[in-house]
Length: 297
Ligand SMILES: Nc1ncnc2c1ncn2[C@@H]1O[C@H](COP(=O)(O)OP(=O)(O)OP(=O)(O)O)[C@@H](O)[C@H]1O
Ligand SMILES: [Mg+2]
Image (cartoon, rainbow, N blue to C red; front, side, top):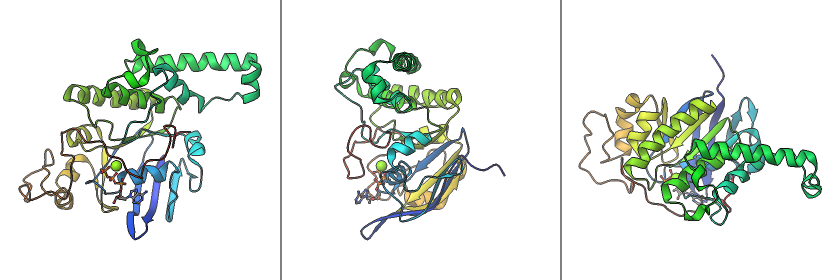
């Protein structure tokens, strides 16, 4: 069997008495598009925080292309090829759209501080490459016309796209997207779906997608892992997951698109505030690491 690009093996993390992530296994092939779903508080964002080095696992292994990532700083993990976006958008609101992407490009920059101060030929050439790379990304993301605008002045949907562009500027082999469709209207979601597909195909990277919009997940992902109370309760293709009784149970009352009858469809939900197919509400949690660059560099 071909070994996976990325793997979580038996990874756990507790906050005090709460097992937020409980012996989670997950494997992604290079170029794979994998969904990570589950009700609110299931542990999805905590998995991203573990992968990006914001938290260290209590047990288990994280591996990228066979290399063990445990204990590496977020900066080193970004260098190793993992980039992310955040559940609550993190952009540099006071920088221009172009500069936001250039910040991402700098994760890969090779020149030193001394070269920058002395403005050596190597530094100038490096900056030109970064500029060209950043502009190409803005083109891909339909943001080229906004390059000189302040990022904070963009509408919500474009800010989310900008955050993905900045993550891609690090040239990751694995991209983690935490609820990229949250707060988007149906037109923006349709565009986002096409964009995620295009990114995967064009940049040939693997994508791990957390999303409450089930139709988006089911349409995009080849494989899905379902978490509930920190544990993997199901994994498989979209149809397998949609028809899994444990998944239906976890989503109490949430119709899973394409699933046969949901026996508890009329029951109360277990506090899942983000219904399938609707925009999510932004939340603030200690999950989030301070600073817009957290986890990326
Ligand atoms: N830093 C923290 N300290 C204490 N508890 C935390 C911390 N971060 C997360 N938790 C708790 O861990 C559990 C998993 O949280 P997490 O944010 O990973 O859920 P999630 O699946 O991303 O949920 P949502 O869909 O609402 O974003 C929750 O019970 C949450 O309250
Ligand atoms: Mg979350």
